[in-house]
Length: 68
Image (cartoon, rainbow, N blue to C red):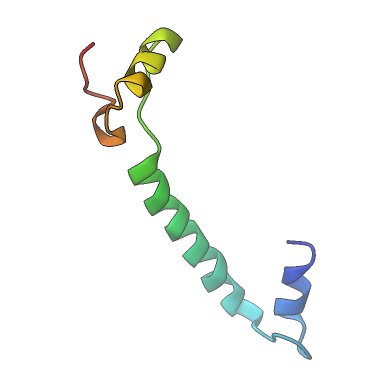
């Protein structure tokens, strides 16, 4: 961030000005989609239950409702 942002804002280099928000918005959207599909819901589970879910290879989207 400390290296890339000054180049994006510099009028002699990237000259993106306010369009830098689209860069961060795009990265934020990608991160949101990735976390929706690949981060499991583990609220209220013990460590042993979580280990069992991963051992049984339960799909990430079904971990929140899977009954052990």
